Image (cartoon, rainbow, N blue to C red; front, side, top):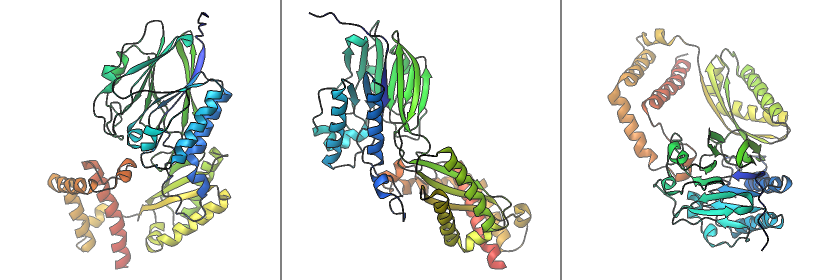
Length: 426
């Protein structure tokens, strides 16, 4: 029998929330958008992940849930994954997968056979897979169904002594409220297991929650809509002498989303405002010289240009998109433009006026200051939210959820209707 040779210096990749073949929303309907790039973005990002694993000769790859997207039913997605796993198998690279909430709903994920280098953790209880030659123990548990409300972490075993211990968990983790509370747990729940590295999934932004021990969300590899802005990718972990010595984020995305908030306070004309926004887009292009970009532009500020935006908003939106397209040589696609500007008014003086505008502003003030009125609005919004399609809820397209949100909405309504009334009076 050959003795086991121990290697305590190695590297591995940590990925999660690949959501393969999930569409990039709100872009395909935009004239001139690169349909093939949009349609294949999640696959291209995943191929870059596999390329990185092979090029950097990692020992293994971790996928911490939601490899699939729940709505994807095409078996070609499964065949694509099997092919990528085979590429790793040919290089002797192991893959360890836990199923997340989306995987639990996807029928392909349950039926597809993968190469023997892939280990998928079961859902009945936490399991441990040992890699003796690396003195590494990987602990994990998959979701049995979409809505796992139990704290899975509490049943994970204690870390194995003298081993590098990794915990794989698809979890909302306390403090990450924007994501649905699946397999909720606290940081203290994780720390008491005495693991060296927690490979988390479910939260779509890259986040190092802790370094002692390492608790990491790698984030989604490819942003799909405006709530997933900025650089997206995976994490490379270097291990020396059974300790993680570095955790580095590697970009994988092939199209990048950004929100541009353009404050055009003082702009006298819409043309002047458009020129300011043009320069902001140019800066974003310079910061991201190799990737196509998808932008949402929110235009704010107190300015005379507001009059033109209110009367010819569609025209100025089209002009801005056209100029951005020329600037970027078709490398930028504008997902949406929102005009939230206002006229430069002395609101306090206007409130005192005995006309319809003054009456309107005073009424809004009373509503903002009335707890009963705000609670009524919140209740109505809550009822409407329950009727929204689930994909809109996951994108964060909810109606206002708390008192501050309602007040902010009332301010937006005030700015819009005030300008309409003034323009009408004039």
